[in-house]
Length: 365
Picture: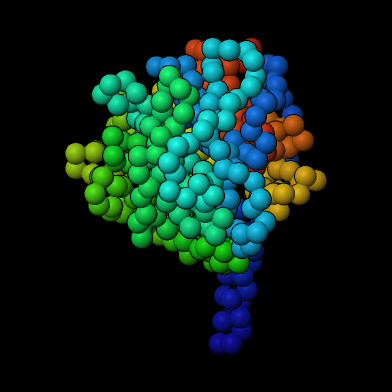
């Protein structure tokens, strides 16, 4: 009997070790290629973790200065910023925008970002923010286009914003927000990763109250389709993308499919043709090393940009790798967003700079 128990335990152990090794991508490598000429954008140096493109105004807003799982607040010596990038110019320079009347300006370290066009045509930003002490909030800002400034509207805190990562504006005061876990420390996060007992999920906030839509999972990047009827969720730990129908009136989601990516997709962008784009982490072990010591310039992580063209029933997707880098040029890609009718591409990174590429190759075969 004891031998049987030991054999069963050994089998579980072998399975666990094998799954862990696969999760950390120890068997993978990357090969450098670019869709055209790629350049560094002047401005962001402490990350360009998320990007929201405002098609109506041909501009992009970029978050920079992320603080994540920070066990020592004194190490976060950089400033959190929002950059503005003119998509009609070829200056390759992003401009840091002043933010007026922030409640806690020294605790503003932005993560995910989304926007909403108001009735008067102005732009409202919804931003996931962490403090140096890794406390969380959602900050809402209105963009003053004439003076190129951001005005603070409100700061929201909620017990369900456990470890917010990404956000989707769904109205003038409502949004969806993802939690990529529950642990607040590096050690606690390691325990979550190795045990698989994740405390993240998806939350909807209607302007007054919040409610869970997904629990006990990992929800990283999130985005809605152009018609706002389909929700995409990155389960980065499983290397899959969850596809859900979204009914805002009923505040309900229904799972349609789950797409295996075999890479850790981070944030998302939907182009004019409803293709899904993502900046991904193809080798998780290197991403974990880089993100665990992101002030060390000698550490970097591979980058990958994928485009997903979904079938009409949203149950399958054709994947094209548009960009790949071993990390020396673009380290730890987190978001990829196209503009100029798909001829140009922005690639944001978790803790480093911003890349701007031309797309000179066909992506449809």
